[in-house]
Length: 275
Ligand SMILES: Nc1ncnc2c1ncn2[C@@H]1O[C@H](COP(=O)(O)OP(=O)(O)O)[C@@H](O)[C@H]1O
Ligand SMILES: [Mg+2]
Image (cartoon, rainbow, N blue to C red; front, side, top):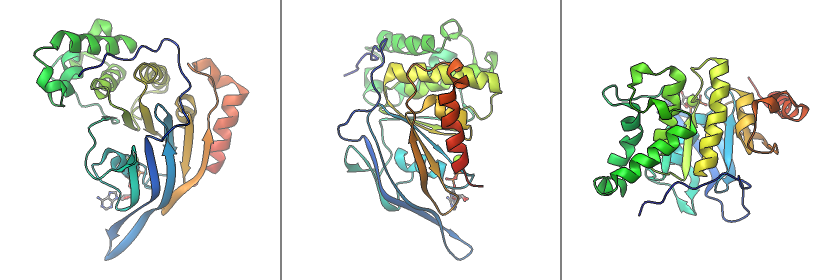
């Protein structure tokens, strides 16, 4: 049964006090390296509530991408457990949308049809594609309008800027209405101005869809702007060395970046980053 996108003109508080959607329970990771096992992640314990947006920041190689892969189920946690609604994640989850640094769009499909691609692959949408095509097109158009791409539905990827392609790929990641959106340095390749525009658009999408967002980023301002909670990881073997709730009101604006409160969050997180 396909549900329409949730209408969220008035934002709700992100975190509820109920059961967490995701839990990390003494999660560790090691890989073979030069004849022995090298510990990458020592022990991570945390929980993420439905509708929360969290970021992970930390030095290169500390295991941030690995954390996303454990949540996605592509590489289940080898030590400890990652749970979704109390169930151990042991195989790829269906209720996940993913966006990476380099959006891969099919060059022979226009923007709208690139966004709709997952619906042709994921159940139950693929079985309903024929009967509900108009409804699905409407869902895709709704997401594209949220990121101000409503006039670019018929354009092909080569006719879009890097920022536009990334906006389209965020819509594609959300078209099957996942409960969890995984973002691995999605704006790392964009210039600073475009990146800030992307924060605003991602926030609008996330507030529209109301999923859990998990963002990996090197940009601490990006983490503060977008998150309800920021986790700072240590260098390898890593663990969470600092976490903070970001209590700025939503929707957040780029002007807020200039506020003392925003800068206090930024500098406190910065002080905890190890090299
Ligand atoms: N399949 C693998 N085999 C061996 N080592 C790996 C593998 N995947 C990742 N690693 C190592 O695990 C560490 C963490 O990787 P990653 O999660 O990509 O870190 P980050 O995203 O924080 O930069 C790195 O040192 C990387 O070399
Ligand atoms: Mg990485």
